Image (cartoon, rainbow, N blue to C red):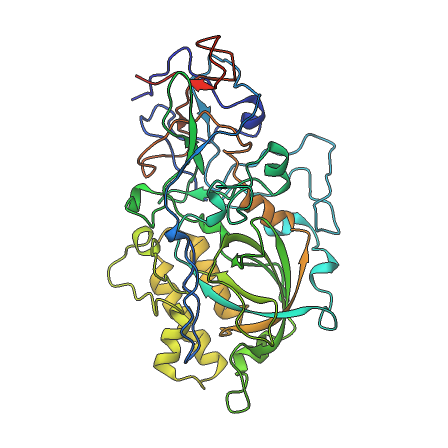
Amino acid sequence: MKHPFKKGFIAISSLAVACFVACGDDSSTSSPQVIPDPTSSATIAPGDNQVPASSGSIPDQELPGPNSSAAVADSSNAGTVVPGSSAEVTPDDPGTDPMVPGSSESQPSTPELDANGFPTIESYGAPSPEYTKDISATAKRGWNTRYWDACKPHCSWLRESPNDITRADTSSNEAFVANHGIARNCNIHDVEVPAFTLGNVNPYAFNYVGTRSACGDEKSAGVFTCTDMAPIAVNDTLSYAYVAGTADSKCGKCYHLQYDGHFKDEFEMNPPRDTHKALKGKHLVVMASNIGMDVAGGNPNLPAGQFDLMVPGGGVGAFDALSTQVNGAGINWGAGFGGFLTECQNQLGYDSTLEAYQTCIRDMCDAAFGNSGLPNLLRGCRWFADWYMAADNPTYYIEEVECPQYLVDHYMSRINTTVETNIKKHDDWSTYKEGDVLDTLHCWGPGEGPDPYNPGRGCEASE
């Protein structure tokens, strides 16, 4: 049944709604629709008791709306139409050929789209030479752990204070856009849903509240990491991925990693394995979509510290939403911290061959994700075996770089495009389908109503 909308209800502000397009399914459904879009269960080397970060530990918090003079314009629209799975892409105007940041080639004006509605990886053109240059002579060194808990990303939460770097910067629209806005999140069916909505509202005030993580009590009603944030290979020597970064890395920043053939806990009697050697010389450009306060340094020889790589099958950690999203009977998720590789090491030993580890991991990937209906998870899991060479806690040289457009596109929310919203809070996002309309409220700026003598902002409460 259709959502009843009051005449006073409006769509998101013109700035926020500009990028929205209709997505397909029956818009008369009574529940909002889901869009496909944490933090960590890192691999722990033998004897390493480190526990990686997790986005699941972040509580739901209601924050006051920004102190902005911009009012939400009145409109007779019934609601906001949300893009489809992983966001729908509108082709550029005819004749345009925009340059892609971080690319040496321009993106086609009408790129070929993948199954998620994004341009294919090939459509972004040749990657920047900066992503594959040798940085070994000048860069610091760090190391990767790994995880995929499927929780709402840290960077999908609103910033709590000016000094908070672990969440999206909502101090102003300019700061919001400059830091790539807020990270996308998806419902259990991998459809993007709002990262934040209106909280409790009345005719004189309102605030914003983040959509609740599936790693909390909401489970299937909550929100998850969008599966297209799984790693993807650009070519044999370059890939893109997302990470939980250290407290210094900040949401929306990107880094070039050049693998050096070593690993975090090596010493004379514990040398690099074939897996580490096979990864040597490859390059990975990562974007921080999660921030883990326990993802940090700890090795004086690796001053750049740790990144916790988001890779399906990397371990569900302490805040597991993956087994809610992919709940086939009898799935072996491997070690909570370390995932499929750690399970394969337990079965095969720590000195098995590269090929044996790859085969073991592929088999676990296929068993867990082959029939999940979430092909990005299978792709990212097999990437770990085939491109990443099943390397356990490998080390790398690191430098900050401009973000590739591919990572920006899959990071930025296409629903919350400004620091303001008039989307109503919803308790269960699992019923939200592509093409559904998001319920909204009519809101106004300071001094605009309903009481001209009241200086605050407010929204018309729903019945």
